[in-house]
Image (cartoon, rainbow, N blue to C red):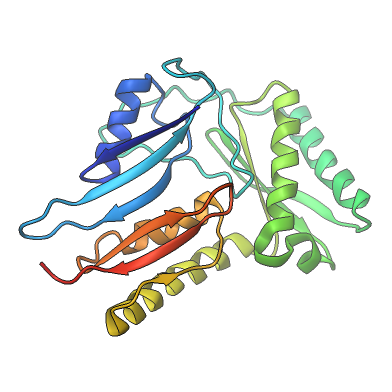
Length: 241
């Protein structure tokens, strides 16, 4: 079930989602679909989309997979803290690492997989391979697909509460930095030409980076367009207030 909420800020919209759907603050993914910065005479507006299994039913220790870099919303300070998840056992970590290697071998490539980081409800795995560019794929789509499979397998191990994040050659960080630069460059182009620009199709996490990056620029607004997982962000000029 898809739910949409609005607020003056991203935090206000998420607060509304938590209150109405009775969800844990760190228990769902947030997709920003529209963002308008506020001005002297105009309130800001952020529109978000939340996916749940059933309306009004709290999700305990579950996480929707977006098929992308699986990054959950981090509750702002002062929010209701969630009990830490039970750490993954050494055996479960080993199974996840072995499963990742087996899938890559099924693709026809050799690799080494190791733990990149351990955080509450998150496990990062690093993939080292001479075929890293192929494993990552164009715009990270192969890596995203592989990550989705690994998270499905984690669910079969009974750890739906844990999100596995795969990376190779620091692709995730490099991609995020590239998207921030793209967002600012596009905003400058839109400001200069006064014409909107439609960016390339992106997964929910990537779109959220663009929305959030430009949210505080008063003469620029953003909106997601399209259907399916990979939508496009349109950057508009609205003028100074």
